Image (tube, rainbow, N blue to C red; front, side, top):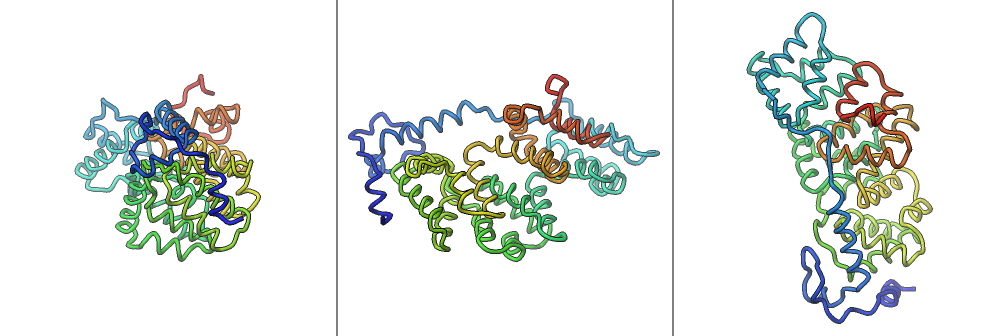
Length: 372
């Protein structure tokens, strides 16, 4: 069956009036005339989910932050006899990133040294990775992780997936600028050189940072869903390219409706269909995009659980997610983790980590005994 014929057969009758519709942003008049009643319900349901899902991090601006005093205490902790790791944890995990950057400036003025250099020289192992990671601005931290994922021995594909599948256009733009400034290298060129095939092509599409934002066209949802269904059935290079185009360029609002239509067309969830049709890192990337569209905290809860239980506590993944999401949605991630897996993230960190490394991770999570 041709795409146009199938699309026509699956399109319900258009509504006669659009007076009461509440679409944001408002599409053109021609698109409004084609909006379907069920699709309007999907838009309202998606908007309702966004409104009532309060996004909450675990690290906030500290009203008692004194950059000069904090810098002095950090200097004493790092340059005295031994290293007072408790002081490092108490300060660096209890200040937001903007405050930590201000402290770093005060530290440089006070001691004439870069605090990141001093942290690297005085600390070791995974505790060092946590403390150093906290001192990077978010775009620079993403750039740092991507660089090391591609420039080490082999490529850490899961790091590329976690970052590029979940970041907004603005975050990707800032990340690429930071990557260029820090490493004098183009992120997209490095992705092209270090990966291959349709996995590379999909990463390259995401790295463009050109996803539509805040716009949904209900009249196109059925057609987009049919393209995805055909891509899952035929799996030719052309169909894979079309699948990438939809998943990497359509807005989250649009994709949410497309996934609903896909279920209606195929009788199957899009994730199940992808699992049947694709494999390897391309499958992981496509599924990551879908899960991030649906609920990023759930995706990162899944990734943390996988890193802790299926990979023998993959420290890099745990550290990266906790730091990157600490001021965005880490509290939501903690809730999803407990809901999905029965035990809390705090419990599992306590079980697998130890010492000051454990204390630092728990401080970032804002853990308490009730959540154990």
